[in-house]
Image 1: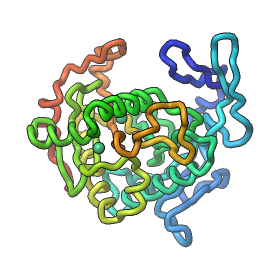
Image 2: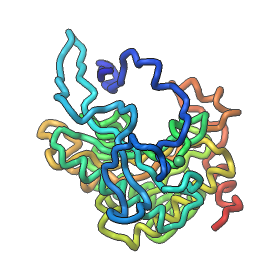
Image 3: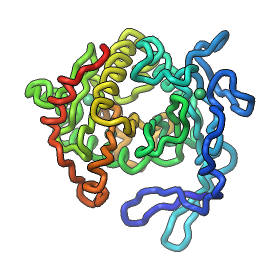
Image 4: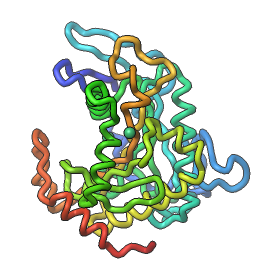
Length: 328
Ligand SMILES: [Zn+2]
Ligand SMILES: [Zn+2]
Ligand SMILES: [Zn+2]
């Protein structure tokens, strides 16, 4: 497998001929505490005794930590080897305990582990971007039955984040304000698309959703990097855990299947001198979690991705999710 860059959209894709075996169905759970060997543990919380959450090497990683990226040109094209890191975050030792039915403390430990892993991977100067994501449900491409998320560390900034970084910087240059802070302020004032606010965190439906019931979770106070908040302020983490848990419960009243991704600032240990978006990143970027529910019945409507088509407005979606009966 290798990484190739589309010269027009400038997005990187992983491509190659994947050996068929990677699609073999899971027989026994490899992530349960009593699983027979094979998983390589990277780090766990707590670090001694019975673990509550831990990260392990992905059994069939898309990115490999060894080797050189070997950035090279192929005529007008760019390609490189898929060097980076790919880990599985085992959210909970229990096979049936998910982010929406675990305790706030358990969700908090998971978020702390995610923050620690991101910070640790960012120590590698080759790594440009680290994030975690979760695909849940068969229509969302769920990979393992155990409650897990995945961390990827890449030598490039993924396209969507790059768009956000550029847009955030442009907005900042003309207004000297963070676009995400401005969105939050307006949304809280209008209150039409806010699902729930919990301490310093807000869950809202974006003004222009890409899919029905798309939801973002953001810190109310400006903060460019999730991993900094995630580690430094345990009190804040409790509110974030509760909000994440409750928001997923709301999403699950609509559909089981969803994608979740963290968007956080890129590795700023070695900022680029040529890329403009680095210059004001701490002021113009604002981390957030995006949840994209997958509605099987509506899937056909937005498979044509040139223009997103979302047949439920955010105002209606938010109203429904706000009123949804959740466990608490
Ligand atoms: Zn399991
Ligand atoms: Zn902000
Ligand atoms: Zn984003």
